[in-house]
Image (cartoon, rainbow, N blue to C red; front, side):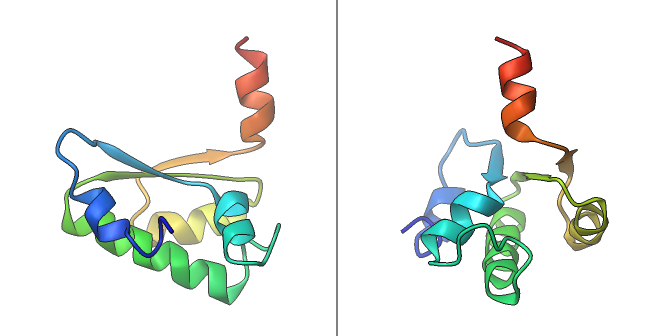
Length: 92
């Protein structure tokens, strides 16, 4: 649902950053754990485009350094390379 409404989501006043969860997105698209797949990356492109249109920062977490480099070239400003779950648990 979020992908279908991404433009409206990015238009929300006070929203500063859009967080793209590749596993969440791929699962919602019926392609669990396939964040690098062309279909999921097309969804990522839609999110990036909407965020840029509305002046929002974009955050993406991946374990794949090569994907992180490609996303930086596509406009993602905040990249976490590693396990987001381990990073969250480490701060509890």
